[in-house]
Length: 212
Image 1 (cartoon, one colour):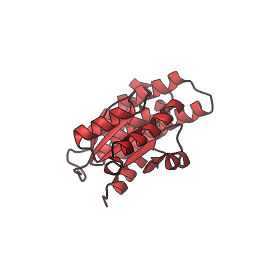
Image 2 (cartoon, one colour):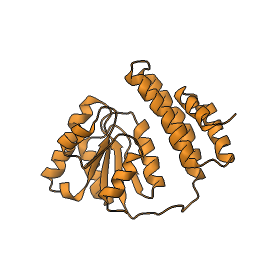
Image 3 (cartoon, one colour):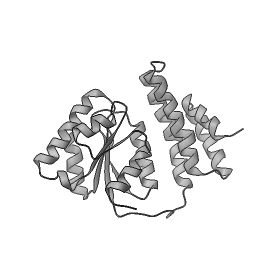
Image 4 (cartoon, helix red, strand yellow):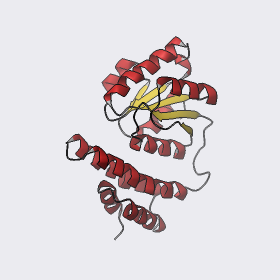
């Protein structure tokens, strides 16, 4: 039987074909797309992340979990009626610093898009300058950075310093999240906001860009 809990298990077990099939069944049954995304896909990914943190999973499991999520997310996105919800004239540059891991970043991108923002997703393996350059060229209103391993933490600090050096720090609120980050670290490094979960990115963007 197709249930959101069963979908969570399939994502946790990294079974993309089965997860996509069950996602389609749940949507066809009329379940709320956001609930499917959050309680099915995102919680399943969190389960894999928790196992990894407890050293009961390996990097390959994280990669497989990302593949599984990518099989489900487009189906969920398509289930949101076109034009549903408020659309804001706000652009957000989003990317992963240095690393190629993109599970969390992709979820944040999805939720920001659903939440009414225009997302300029610059993908993975980015340098501090990549974020600055894209923000300048696109006329972005906010920069969102995914930091998932220790060397990228130093590069995030470099991004903040670069924005200050180029005298555009006040122009771009910067938010950050990722496996190795914490609220205390983000505040210490000068971020304007830190997200523990993917959905926090929407709340932070709304707050920093003055959207009620």
